[in-house]
Every structure is written in C-alpha cells, then in structure tokens.
Length: 124
Image (cartoon, rainbow, N blue to C red; front, side, top):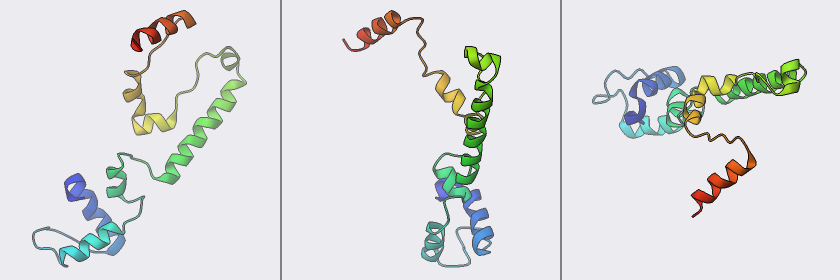
C-alpha cells in the first residue's frame, strides 16, 4: 500500500483511526499493527480507491450512473434523441477518465460489409 500511495494511506489512517504517521521509519505503533489497520480500511478509503484505479466511491459511482441513465431517458424524447443524434455525454465516464482510454480502442464501420471485411482480416 505504501508503494501505491503513502499520502493516501497517511490520510486514511488519520481520518479513520486518528493515528498520525509522520515517518514510516519510526511509526507510533508496530508496523504489523499498522498493517492490520490498513487492511481494515473500507472500500471508500483513499488508498483502496487508488489501488482499484478509481476516483469515485461506490455511492458516487451509482449517483453518476443514475444521472447518465436519466439523461438518456430525457434525451430519447427530444428531436435529436428520436433521430439518434447528439447523445448526452456520460458523467461517469468523464469523471473516471474512461472516454480518453476508449476512443483509441473503438473501431467504426460504415456498413455491415465493411465490418465483415475487417473481421475476416483479423481472423486469418
């Protein structure tokens, strides 16, 4: 955990257990005890979120996803939604920075034939 985020672990320990660690070389408690406490930190702790490469808590993730779904429901009843244009951007994906990662991985096809040609070239 220290390798992943020493600052996050220090903050979590101070917030959760009221243990202020200034120097890991001379901690106020035995390292084995601090390791047990660190292992007991919740999934919403800073260090756990950093370890799982996410910025949001589970509750915040659900809230962002609810906003996204509601936005789509509203959009579907607009002129653009009926024609499949200008779909709202995902709040969840923006906060988590997922849009940047996916753009490079997405392959678009103009027709079924174009997809089948691409697919057959990949499976040879």
